[in-house]
Amino acid sequence: MGESTTEQRARAGDLIVIHGHRVGESSRTAEILEVLGEPGHEHYRVRWEDDRETIYYPGGDATIQPAVRRRRTTGN
Figure 1 (cartoon, rainbow, N blue to C red):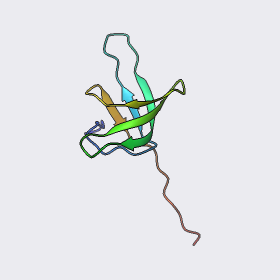
Figure 2: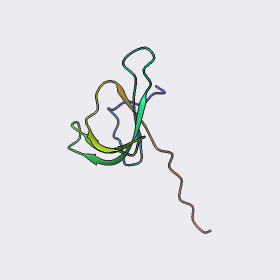
Figure 3: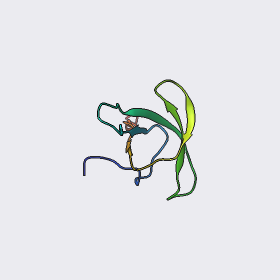
Figure 4: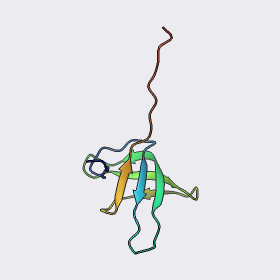
């Protein structure tokens, strides 16, 4: 169960990794800026590694990696 899939609910800040389709083809990564669409039909406004922003509709070749989120601490 270690790998995430697009079936999880993604949030802004999470990463989408698109795996290469051919031997030797590298993966591409984008940061989710905004989740669009209804549950089950989500698509995303993303920023790619080269700073381009696009709307992305995920396919079976993509996984979502949750962002590292910090816990809030109180001043006590």
